[in-house]
Image (cartoon, rainbow, N blue to C red; front, side):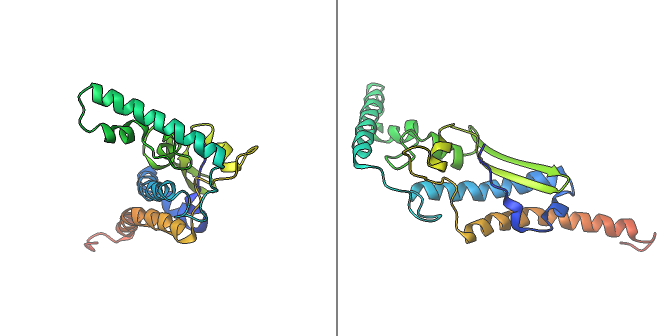
Length: 199
């Protein structure tokens, strides 16, 4: 499974996350929301929003992919039309979940990184050395070949991000933790307050 350790740059995050599992879960949900938005942008811009554009398809494969996409589009439109669907043109996006862009012929990879559920992964762990939040995809299996640039495939990193985008994920984690930290401080203060102090 491809993962991102979100709290790399936060030296004290593990202390905050060790408050309880609710804090970890809130941090995971918030970080994943930001992460999936960034991934959606990355696929929409074919890598450009997070770094350099993904390498263009070879002319030969581009022609083949165009034919595959056109064939799939005709098939879906035909099915929709046969069923009396007036929005036959929009049915393609709904079924394929993709555009004719790099890494998006069927939409499986984009969905795995940018949509909750399915093969998308968002998890939090509390380890002895601190908490870890992992975000990414656990499939489709072939995404690794693109991420690593195996064989003749050029490397196209589905998780490339700029520094400010990593900071946005970390900021989401911090926002999610604030209520837990405040609650923890209140509990600690109340536990240490003398009786009758009104604290």
